[in-house]
Image (cartoon, rainbow, N blue to C red):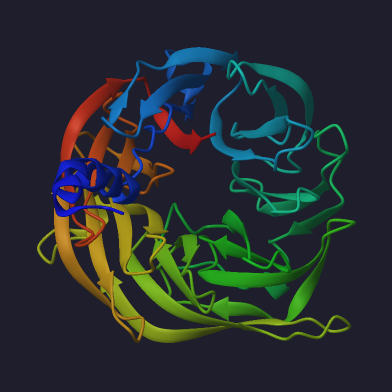
Length: 397
């Protein structure tokens, strides 16, 4: 039996016990994350792929150090984890038909890259590589060669020789745009795998068009969809796309006229005749300020926050990062325009926590760090500038 006196004597112990029961468990901070930086070796300073670590608690990036010598690794991609190992793929973006794609083994403990193989990119100037989420197939866009290619990913993580190659100089892929010097020929700029791994979407900057292929994941063979092409405004120069988390909206950044387009994406569920369809909503917004000359800017990258509420884009020339809110109908409204903290922001990326954005400034030899407010979407910074010459691409791994 607990007397009144004993109750008051035990009360502090009960209180402490209850507080400890309901106290939030203190989570250990996430460890620093590896970042790989592809650079422009044609400038004569950078030598290949650099490695650094990022602390997602403090937002600090270590000074990048060379981890792999390779020619002009302008775009990087990772394979899914297999038996505790991953492969890192780099396109070697030299403007020559002998251009290659290099496979590296990624040591999960040290971050060391070991070159395993090289295969032809099937065209000059490879600008983009993507890998499906199952790790069976990879795809490359060759900007100067005017081709795209597909590859099987072999059990050891290396790429096969090209399985399929498509030449975008063929009439079925459209006609050149009106911008001299930039659209005198076709220029496939990106190859993006759809979220369900069933389709490949190709941006052709030279022909102002997007094309769609069905992917056979086991063989890496590509089948042109019907219709094949979605044409855009003449002179727009489609560069990259980002899928909204709902899987139904696509946002396209156009390099030449510095705009964003909103497209609708639908697919059939038929396994016998799968089809993917793009519909242009004809709603376009500028990435640059109204008074900034279009001829002095090229838009470069587009990304969407994981909650689907905000879109981010970069401008080379105006040298800005721009933040848009995404409405319930998919329309965009600019909410912030901020200096990139350098010159020529070719590529930027979220860190794995989505609380930070890292921006590679190609012509000011720097990576700038911005804090992202997850509620408002707005950016603060740059809070740090890390030195690395001619950064072209940033990859967390």
